[in-house]
Length: 386
Image (tube, rainbow, N blue to C red; front, side, top):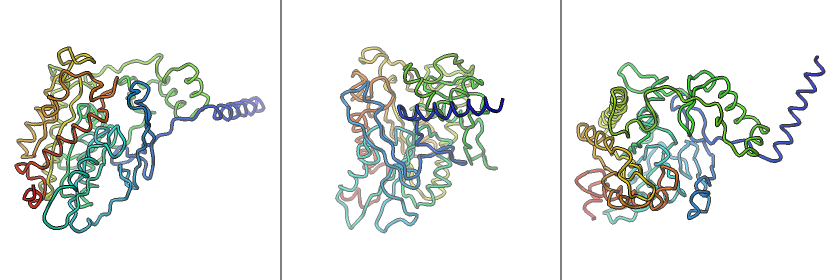
């Protein structure tokens, strides 16, 4: 019996070794965090080529570089702010990170443009990109309070995506709040005990088969080679959608049921708490939203009426006004550019993210909003020099 076990083990090892010559296991650029749920791998690099197949117009892969803090910067941010430096932190999800080369993200374009402005005296704008995939207001609060505030920010820009309420719903399942009701920690999820798994196709019931598939996908060369030969992603068979009343697009629905309204209120409450926190630390704050293409059109050629509601943008506007936070309604600002255009004009085909043209017009809207003296987001001498 023991001989059979040893032989089987050796066969498995040999199979893994041989399979490793033909395929690589998926490499995660995300690491778990006890407080922030996950971060980009410190001092890591990630090559992006996922848009090319469906978007041959953008055929060049690009590399994102992360500093030791896990932020999308080529240098480490010092706790002590350099003299004559106005420090801006961008907080958000993958839209903030930018699905483009680093120099074409909104924070990078904003930094370049602000440093070209005429102004009295010597001054430098430092715009730091902390955008991390699947972050949401629950984690934004934690990141700002327990990390960013230690770096002496002058202004924090919070980008709120149309998937944020869904992500908030996920994090509050195991999230920890302090005694004042403020988000305190978003513990990393455990795929072996959680009742559901979040996939690109939506939530699936975390049964034994799905957990085994995910384990093999992460750890086995043989399994990944089989997937490649069959040209199928994991969890294509036997997946069972989770019967929950909240989905990734719930607050994009035209009508909100009671469950959606209650969860959206939680997300909006997180935003109110961010405003209170920043005001207590004398840090300026700006809110903006990320418009999705389906809020402008219902078909890829732009000819059908919008498929999704734009209500979320105006709910955030209401909270921003109540909290006295300058708010850039990106949905309205980009509407003249995007409405009645095909999806591929400003977004990647078959994806919700902007392409380089989309980031360019979105960055322009940010710059105009920042430079508007009525919003009082920059230094006084900057406005005097305009």
